[in-house]
Amino acid sequence: MLKGILAIAGHSGLFKMVSNSKNALIVESLIDKKRMAAYASSKISALEDIAIFTEEGDVQLAVVFKSIKEKENGGQAISHKASGTELKAYMADVLPSYDEDRVYVSDMKKVFQWYNILQENNLLDLEETVEEVKEEE
Image 1 (cartoon, rainbow, N blue to C red):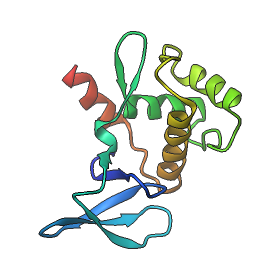
Image 2 (image 1 turned 30 degrees about the vertical axis):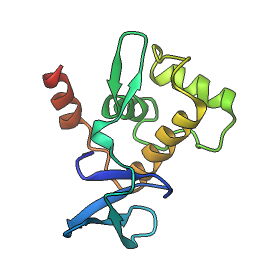
Image 3 (image 1 turned 180 degrees about the vertical axis):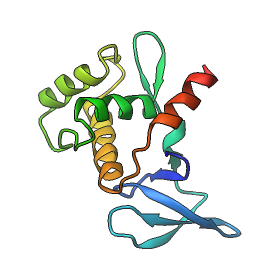
Image 4 (image 1 turned 135 degrees about the vertical axis):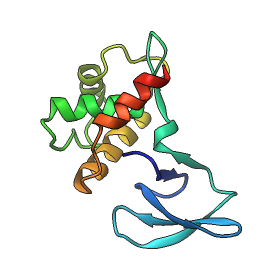
């Protein structure tokens, strides 16, 4: 599910890797479907590599997304534009052990915005991704 889905610093939203060229990745925005080149100088993060800090260690983003999906019965999460207090309360619901000192409101905004983008694009088939994460642990 999260394979090939990228976050690129300086660009809002998420991108799907379409192809790669000699010195760049060709990506397509999940928001407006426009394609662009993402060069090696850009800070590119694959969603499958991102984890959230908790009191016990790190939790993969796929596990957090699965928790949100279960809470919302497959629907949209809280808006990333909600107040900091609301975002913190929502995060505590979906990941009670998150590290309040190291997970900032700006991080929560990204997580909820990304979840909503993936949900709108029907890219939240989390069962096999969560199983892969558990096998790696």
